Image (cartoon, rainbow over all chains, first blue to last red; front, side):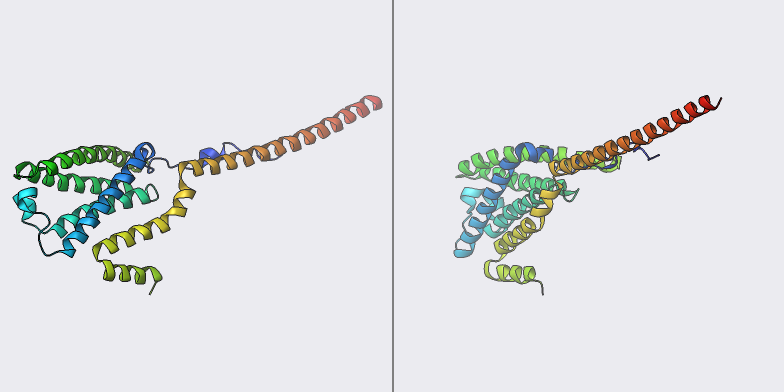
Length: 161
Length: 88
């Protein structure tokens, strides 16, 4: 008499959904577009800073703190934060810890944008900088919270394993 | 030296940090695009469904075999009982 399967193969098969970002499933396009925009902005600032000897981020428009460092440094900061975030979006789930890349990218953006907002708030001609930095900061604050959720889920599933 | 490293070196030399960033992101995109397609939850679900369907058809075949075996055995026993009754 043949052997009857005691349980289904579906039960044997491990379906690992948790490392796949739930927030990217819902809001992935907006995050990708925003990060590409910030990456291009960082590249534009980098190219501008490299193509001229004059400081493109003056203390009058950007505040003393931003003005005391080179524009290349700020451009590199924005560019690298976006690159790390985009790497997290591209890798999404294939490496379980990919949520941490997006978390680092969002946190990096939040810190940089907070400094921009602070600089704009205190600079005599910084109201435009302050306005866009505040909007971008709000956006990245949301990204940070969404990715914290993904990170928590990835850790919880690892514990369950 | 691998082609990727040579390409990355060229980009860094020509474009600096933006070249490195764009190069690395492109490399990641190429490396993970196909793997991502195969490992999405949808793809995993489709693979599980195929597995379960195959298992079901195997189970059906097994049931049919057992039914045939049981029917044959029943017929054999019936014949045996009939013969014994006749001998009696």
